[in-house]
Structures are given as C-alpha cells and as structure tokens.
Amino acid sequence: MARQSPSQRFPKLRSWRRCSRLVKEQRTRLYIIWRCTVILLSWDDKC
Image 1 (spheres, rainbow, N blue to C red):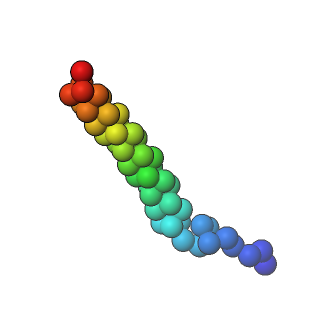
Image 2: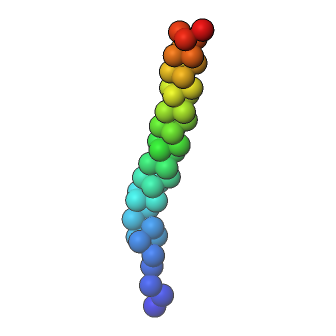
C-alpha cells in the first residue's frame, strides 16, 4: 500500500496553503504601494 502525502490525507490543508500564499502576496503588494505613496508624499513636501 502506497503512503499518502499529507496534502492527500488533508485536502483542506492544501487549499489553506494556497490561500495563505495569496494573502501574503496581497499584503506584499499593499506594502509596496503604501511605501511608494509615503515616499511620494514626503518628496512632494520637500519641494
């Protein structure tokens, strides 16, 4: 009998990993946009 991987035994675990990866990507994008906005606003103040 072949051994099952954890993702085959627990299908919800696999979808949770996919979801957490997508959340992490979105957080990264939001952080980059936020940093660019802060830099642009502070740069505008100095001019």
